[in-house]
Amino acid sequence: MAESSYKDAKVIEASRNLVNIVAHQETSHGTKEVIVGREKQKLCNEYHTVPCETHTSGWTFVGRYFQGTFQTPTTVFADPSGKEISRHVGGLSGGELVKKMNEALAKVAGEKVPLPVWQMAKALSNDGEIAREKGETKKAVEAYTKLSRLRGGTIKADAEAALKKLDEEGERQLAAALAEASVDEKKKALRRISDEFKPLPVSAKAKKELDSVK
Amino acid sequence: MKTTSLALALALAAAGAAHAQNRPSKGPLPGQGIDWKADFDAAVKEATARNVPLMFTVHKDN
Image (cartoon, rainbow over all chains, first blue to last red):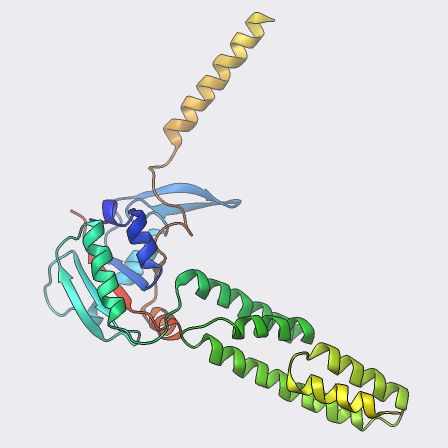
């Protein structure tokens, strides 16, 4: 089953709408050396895209769905919390597996995040976090603003929470700017806040204060 | 000149054949195939964040 179905383009495409774990204790099927980017990697001959450690690690979680003896192959589908919704004992052709995947997908209500969008979201979140840590506010705001435009799952809520924190930081900087005795320094700080925190609410506040400074 | 070209062609052909023999079995490369996860708890965390189901498949060597 693995050798044929998991290489099937339609199965690969459908798998991007799920999170997938394979549990396989043995490694006697061996590995192949593949150059990925500039690195040599030993990838599993059975599952192709991962080292054997991935599926042997998966085996350590078998107890989540199986007790005592059980038949293999068996495929369990679970909701996002990990609660089982269906299982199939025995092999599946590519077409059958795609059908089962789509059935599981249909049992989860609400907007879903396919893998490519999730990868983009993770990259934006990472960019935002790095920029925030470096104090590059403008870049952080841009990354989280882009992230907040993606839909599904918890992406939007996570991005909005990050933007709220940045806005709060902007409010602290705004208070400090308004406390400046020097008009020039005050203007400079307000201009910077207005620019760096755009399009957050604190940016508009800073602009308004800047316009009112004579 | 002809001899040199012939020797070069033979050398390239031999190198190509050796490379073909060492080439791994065909299969998708990382990023092109199924994105298998190694950790169950991390998988549940991702599935929750993406609001997608989990597939947990168990196999043994034949």
